[in-house]
Image (cartoon, rainbow, N blue to C red; front, side, top):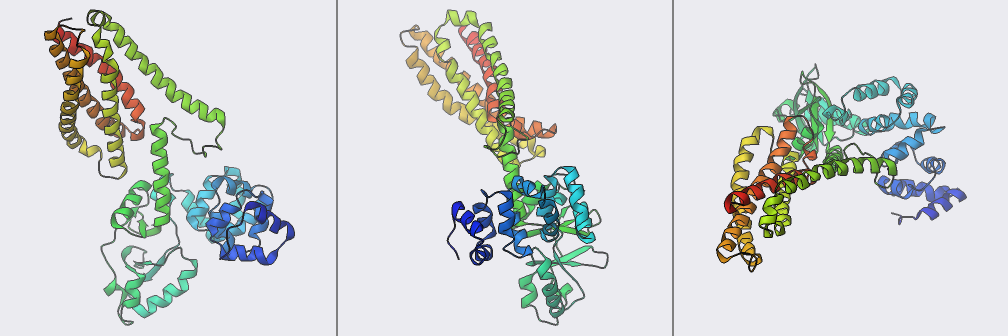
Length: 455
């Protein structure tokens, strides 16, 4: 194995046309490493580097390039060369690339590939974005139930070169209905005369082709599979989703949730590659919305101006009570959004979550309220009469407990409500929840103070 080469050394080898070394690099290094070290090469030099490897190896390396670089390489003279690569690329990687290109470029590329590959491309492109069908591959191994183990091994040996994985082998009937599966290990250890139908597992876990890709990822992770079959509405096998595809899905979903929580949903570009104006527009829009919402806090404070003038010490605790609601709400929202992403909580669990968070909010509120009580006693010393000090501390304790409970409920239930209404739960983010609870928390604080202190 060669040591990783720096970009200048790679450029020097290309300049010298060092065929022996470059061929060795393309053969010995991992495709991901080759893609990484060639990231700084020009498009022309990247194509030259790929020329030092067979077409299958070129496709492996090409799959590890970023989508933006892949799209660049398709342009110009690269368009003709891409037709050969498209034919040997894994179907799922091929479709990911085509989805990132302009429609006119796709229409000019697809006719250049063979008829069989062309049909496969158009089929995979037809599935809705975000569905299981959009991330599956059509390269899977199959055998009939009537075959013996010896015959099945021969079949798999012939299929293996053109399949993404052969660890799982799917058993189909004549109409391509999925009736079972077995692992390569099961097949190898079976007696040569045993029928596939006798050794296969009939309880097949699968996903529908039109199901959400996130559901497919959760199922694969739940059962610890290396791949999961994808079937149509008649239980006919149409593809499989492999573990590496699921990792990509989970990364994309986590990124999408994180961006939504920051009000940056839909920003697919890399951080440093995204246009400055685009990032500014998205960030400014979300921050402006939150800022305007925060102005309601000022409105709420102005409403209780008389109460503040009467008991000035109340104003000293405004930051405290506001932070309690925002912190408890953000914490609850984070927990619920994560639980929803993992499939542990759904809209159907609304009332279970409500009961759980009421108890948790009361417990947390009592804990923080006790701390706030003693803080209220200490701060009000010398500012209020002795009797008023204890009543004031009790008001602070009650307010902190109430706002903590309120923030917990808002933070936990808002993501579920967003999901029920068809919005991404990620929008019920920490800043959004904190801003909402801040405003309502001020109202709760001064309402309790006004009632208890008769201000």
